[in-house]
Image (cartoon, rainbow, N blue to C red; front, side):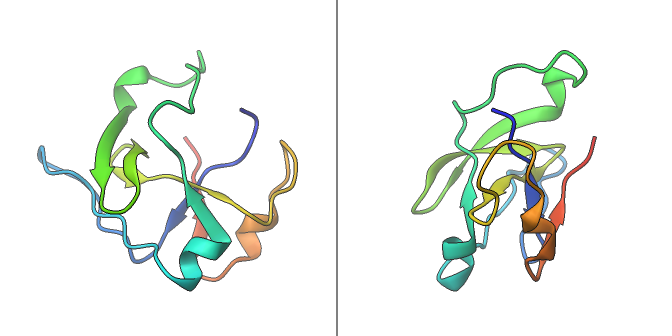
Length: 95
């Protein structure tokens, strides 16, 4: 994959067995796209149990890390880019 993952400030975290709630829509959705449940290959430095897949309305299956819905930035043009850190209300997700 190679692209950075981002979190959206308005999303609701999943906890206690409850799914997260992704709220990135409209103009937000033009700046970031949800990471789909099948888009991630296992990275050995991360615990597979920290990832989950939930159903996001209008999106389908979306990947979450420790209850945080994950996105990739449309500003990132190639693996390793971090231009998405400059997008308002988005933050880089770090393990």
